[in-house]
Amino acid sequence: MNAESDIRAALIAELRADAALAAQVNRIYDGAPDKARPPTVIVGDCIGSDWAVKDRPGRELRIGIVIEDEIETPVRISGIMPLVDAGVQRLSGTVAGWQIGSLVMIRSRLLRTNAGRWNAVMDYRIRVLAT
Image (cartoon, rainbow, N blue to C red; front, side, top):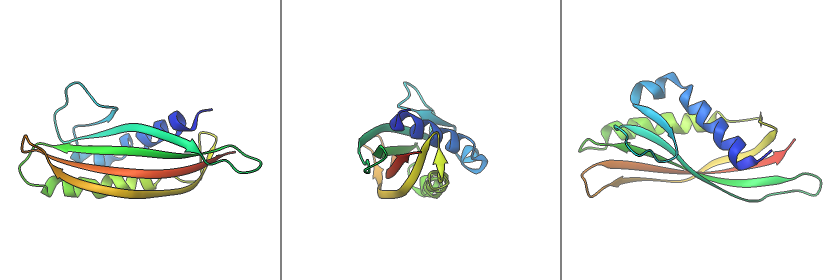
């Protein structure tokens, strides 16, 4: 039972199961792909730290999600961001032996790259306790 891999896998499965999101992107990747045709969603690294209580182990997780697009305006990527957020927010209750205590987006950024593409970066904090 590893919170980082368990919650990250559940998050990827939730995003991949979302038909509305799948209709807007070419693929949802587990980590950075070697080659990808935008628009794509990339679930990045998961950083964990202690969030235990007296009688149960717990973890505070930080997960970054990147949306990449290749068009010159942020219009399409701005429509994908709420779909990703909704998918993440659907994680609740008990997931893979972990009780979700809180789940919040701590920041998001919309960035224009040097190649003229647009990226959105969404960072989440998920606090879990072992069941």
